[in-house]
Image (tube, rainbow, N blue to C red; front, top):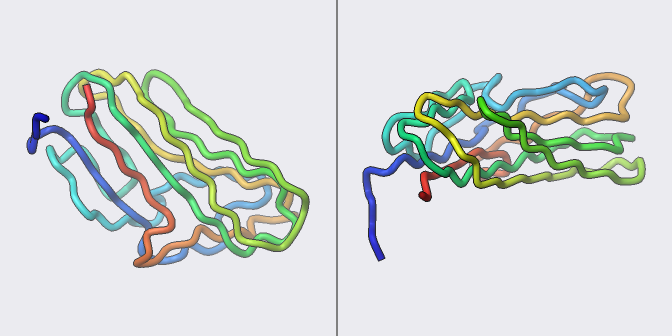
Length: 148
């Protein structure tokens, strides 16, 4: 095993619930409401939601977004958007009033200075009434690390 304590790695989360952000197909970018940093090795992340690769390589990027306030929403689309590609995962369900959590992970090829952000689109509501759940339990987060 080799420990590379200076390799880029980060973990941020939404500390407070962001109210009425999506639901009617509106796209919400994680970081629109300030994120709380747990760690940021190499200084590549800023609290507005953007990770910038410090070196070229393969990055393990992961995100989870928890929504609440859904009443009839049926489609949840989470994406990791990098300079080179967009990675998307779609979750669909029957209309119903329950909280939903969606996640995504990818091994992304990134060149130094490439960026990555996370978006969530909830559809099915008549208006943007779905909230993005935040809190100390870190139910909504974005993290990543250089792996190769």
